[in-house]
Length: 116
Image (cartoon, rainbow, N blue to C red; front, side, top):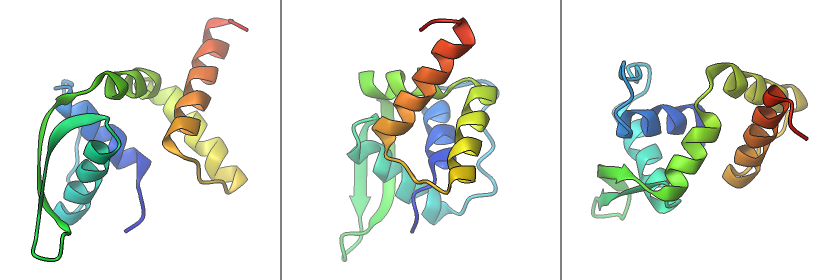
């Protein structure tokens, strides 16, 4: 399964208890479990991954965002900045890692604030 950064962002907003709760209805249960497992593995969410007999994630329990999770979500919270950044990446045909995406979002936030 390919990593979906939009789903990761929405799930993190949900863990943070963002109101209104993000709509995840367009994603399958398998996608939601897999991506929450990725969030836990990446250290963005403190939680538990339940696995099946083959070691594949079959369930997750998200407890809270970690410090790093809050840092990423603060950078990704603004919808306009998020869509603009992902649009640039899509247009360039580039897939990036989580740290690079976070850096791009922080750079975009600085530009919005008029900071160097």
